[in-house]
Image (cartoon, rainbow, N blue to C red; front, side, top):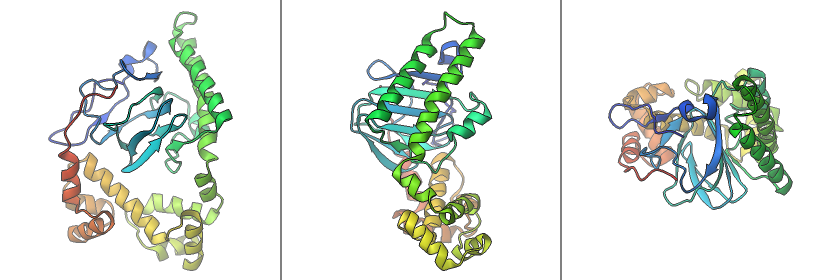
Length: 305
């Protein structure tokens, strides 16, 4: 990754663009080792919360590694993968040692049919993946082949080299997508079409609709049916599921923008700033002002290597 960032005014959380200028041949992907001597972003405060506008897949050979994604902490062991998608807020650990292989992909590098087949923008899929021995071996082999093709710029013209990379990358991503979609958590959630429809409706409407009854009516279910489906899929309630999504979006806006608290509240369905603050504090233990201040008081550490 590069040291180029979208520099913002004040303390606004930075967004890191895909470093196309550092990619071999200028293609829309990079793959290489993590570890000593490889600088992610020279001089950039990666130990603070930031956002990326590209895909990052990290396959770890050592662990544990603690990494925050969308304000949830994940702990990866050797053989695990983390898949961070464009727009997600994340933060590198100060104490973890990042070792393994990292793959980055620029949005638009792959054709739409491949994007859809590989679920590149399935934000409902878990970012932390635990492949078994056979799947891990297959992924390691696929990534190794992709790495070889990426660095081989001598045997093919640039156009053919890029085409081969796209095909090889697609093969890797199909394996990753199958691993993510077949995880126990996702399989359980997707097995119930009632929950799936509710989840999709919340994703589209959470900014304006916080009513369980309204979602139930719109989907044609009784409130009781919806409660049963959500409890079976998540262990929680429909209201809790909606509130969790609202809180996540509020955290993203507080971290990523300098929008006034009242505008953040309005953006997630609270026209009254006081009501938004009460809601946010109830679910996080902090007021929006304190949450934002805590993030921006963090001091940048050395670049992750």
